[in-house]
Length: 472
Length: 103
Image (cartoon, rainbow over all chains, first blue to last red; front, side, top):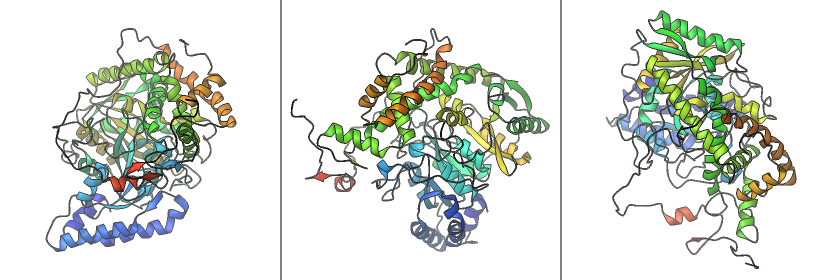
């Protein structure tokens, strides 16, 4: 059952939230041991929330648009009194004293939080193998990764442990695992969703977004969590539309551009390229005008990203100093305590990025690395602006390949970084993008990406819905 | 270092680790010297683009200072916050000595 169907059935009294929840908990019991989607399963809390929803319905009230819908939260979203680890030793035992804004909104909407999901430590990675608590496996093939960094949420939705999931996307961390797990995943416009209570990685790139099995469910979830929040001064101060209205409007007359540089990117497999071309032909049949478009600077997006994101991360992660929360390694003086705590508490990839960012920001290198990357970011923004003069939306691959084997890219950081080559441009520009499943090769899902201009989520979901409707 | 081709040295890594407050082991320093060199070679591709007169983008949306009225509002409970501290004492975070003997 989709989230839309569950919420309708629960609100009308046709189904009880507790029964919906128990079905999901039974699936968790059955397969979680193999998949390891969760860091924490919150069965009792979810049952209490389900009982409250059922009581509200029995009393004639309306428990909200996500009434009785089980949802899995990436473990970098703060949940009051519940461990929020970021899959890091440094936060292993930390219980936030507050809820993230998205979490408050989910509770108010009647959603049932079934657990906190595994991720690459501090959301740094593309396979969920960089977790201090062990990797998550792809539900479609346990020898493969689920993608990352929000691999736990993607796997939880793909395995039916939860109807919906939330992740965060800094360079593709929602869309890439969605693609590899065969579910829908969207990164909204920067500022559409409050980041209050999302543990920061790279603040100018991070966005929270939905996982779902259908485009309409993703639209429902995003509509519920989006909108201005005074606690996040970068959240956009204007009303966010209900994305479900008009979602079935089709693509007749729309101009769709297939991004050349991303569709012909180094390392892309034939199956993935064919999927994007096939999606384009299908939209053409539905009345869209489809052509190829060039974003010349997007070829440099990955390089710019691996200067900008680590630079911001090195600053954001300075807060883990063993003083106010999290791990402390004792030492006779404060500087040694800071440095020993950080060396013990952070995993290899997090240290690599802190080092990279600190170096890129340090005296003598700042302008050649960080400064130049920011100017390249401007060129990428301009490329998109030019493309959107001729096109309403763009199509691209989400990931150049299907899910890879566990361990295949762990020895080579650059090979891992290339997993995000098609998703990173949208983070740099701040524009929204969504991955929609498009068939599979040998049982391994492929995703096609729909990109749209800033704040054009309604249009993006309409096109995504059309892609979903014709997908194999 | 303007063309991005110079490799990062072991001394650079040690200096950067000190700036980043990371007590790296010898093995980590060795490995990072190698890995950061490779990553920076890739990242330095950005220098291939002509960015004369291109302003930097630090943020995808226009940012302005957001101010709120200077009113008293509820804040996090200090007992709850200090309960998450590694060591707390008398309503404060306790840390090891900050000044060294010779300072």
